[in-house]
Amino acid sequence: MEVDLDSFSGRDWETPTDAAPVRFAMVGLGWWTREQSIPAVENAEHCTTTALVSSSTEKAEDVAADLEGIEATLTYDEYADGVASDAYDAVYVCTPNGFHREHVEAAAAHGKAVLCEKPLEATVEDAQATVDACREAGVPLMVAYRLQTEPVARRARELIRDGAIGDVVSIVGHMSDTILDSVDETSWRFDRDLAGGTTLNDIGIYPLNTIRFILEEDPQAVYARTESEQPAYDGTDEHGAFQLEFPDGKLASCTISHSATVTSSLRFVGTEGELSIEGLFFPNTQKVLRVSGPDIGGEFRPEPVDQMREEFDYFANRLQRGLDPEPDGEHGMVDMRAIRALYESAESGRRVELDP
Image (cartoon, rainbow, N blue to C red; front, side, top):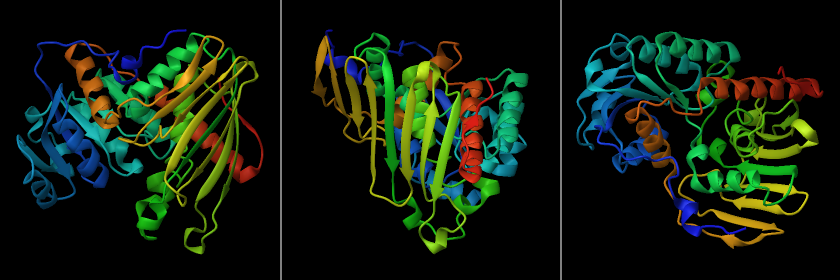
């Protein structure tokens, strides 16, 4: 099997157009929006930031002071009321999970396309209401799974789809970071109503969704266990391990932690070979893809891309072409139901089947 090295950093989804850049309102100006999303859009080809929405006008104006092209700085209430809604075409929602619904519903009410951070909401019920609001308003909703526009993940999916390692038998995934070391007990991450959980839902969603994306299949059952070693995190899921059961007997085993060294990996073992990716789940990191099979073998270290820029440009390019972006809300709901089942399993100690 011949592998095009250039394709490991190429945009297989892109079609250039003469359409104007998509204008974004950034809803929620936490560190991720300021340090990752806004810089990504500044470097993007198909979109721009023209509005900032935060808890106070002062905070929005402080962020706007370092940017060009900002036409409106709004409070959440002003945004919900439709103030300056002609200043943007789409919204990016990046607030605590439990606030996603209200901000997405406001966007839908004003006819704006939505790129909403994952997970969709803190509960399955609120997530479904979010999806319903966009469907009823006829506006596109994309869930911000940036790994689905990561070129290495897309190439891995193609290789596995083409049988490069035979039939997949098992998958092993891991993601960890030190985020709990940088927040105190008042953080929204420890509020179940706002977060929906601590670690399983926050970073467990990365291996969960990426495995779904690469396999192009959804899990049928799950099993999970969580631990909290530090007294300050009592009652939260600081560390976790979970298993996903896929059709035809495929099993995925994943581990996650919010209190361990920053690292990530994903490995697929097949009947005729294996494929692994190091560094996959973090933006701007060096990705290393190793693959061995009957017709292919080697190690590839493509030039890293800005995952957030790819995500924003993909979303905008789809809108420019009049196409609905993917992954959509229904795709995100599969993860929401899986996460609920994972927490149910961790609390009960039992395997939990997912509704088809």
